[in-house]
Length: 396
Image (cartoon, rainbow, N blue to C red; front, side, top):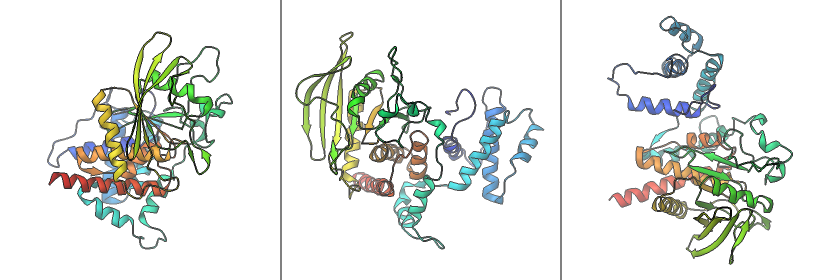
């Protein structure tokens, strides 16, 4: 479980997901669950209290954290060891009470989406709209954006309100004597089975293009997913950060265009990138999805699902370990849809369940505003349902 070495997790979302997964694997007739950390009191105590209080909330609609911790301490000393852990338990239970249980079996997804499209009694908007609004209810504190707010870095942010959290930002190797040289507006995001499986970043600016190539090289990212055109609605959305015909040099890196393949819904470009300092080279592939409308979202998710599949198939085929770098313009909207669906579709295949709300919520703990609009959120649901339909079709 991803518990930090010091203190407590910044958000309870992943811990609640972990606890639910553990409970789902534990049969009703099983013996006592064995829980341990190092000393078996701090994190162990947190896990047990959260689990017990969730059960109590379900059956009695009440909580008594203080009483439960006191009772546990009469059975084992120091259970829930620090004040931070005690506060964290409250935050976890508040989130569980506010957000509820949003996981559904894949076979029930159609019925679940139909229900989300209805207006609940006493409400004026659909359940889907309420669910999306609930995502926005937890706002990040400005203290979480430390490097992004430094005067030497502010001009590197395409939008003033979309910045990486300090804890999850992608750090570049600092250049001696250059203040802020370790900063790029990019965040690490976890995949379904792998930590830091993705880098979500803004479309490079002219002044951050060298940093972009430096990031790809330093973090061994050999696949770029581009989800925007260079210009949309008459505005620049992304600087052309790659050479079209002949090689170009970006700081230490020489980028040679090798090939370009035009597919119905995307363009695949291949580049040979060489580090001029030692002559090492590697191939970097860029997938540019060209079928996203300038306004709104695609009417159907089918083409986008195929595109996601092609990207992941290429990654598996060439066996690189580094993260997939995904960008649109701000690096949160379309980028969020791509990463959300990558995780959700993989989980559907392996576990047969869907939890769109918690997937997006977890991504938002790693980069703000992931899946930016309700339209994009609905597209995620629609695409998952279309994927399920194609899966059933191929199965028969």
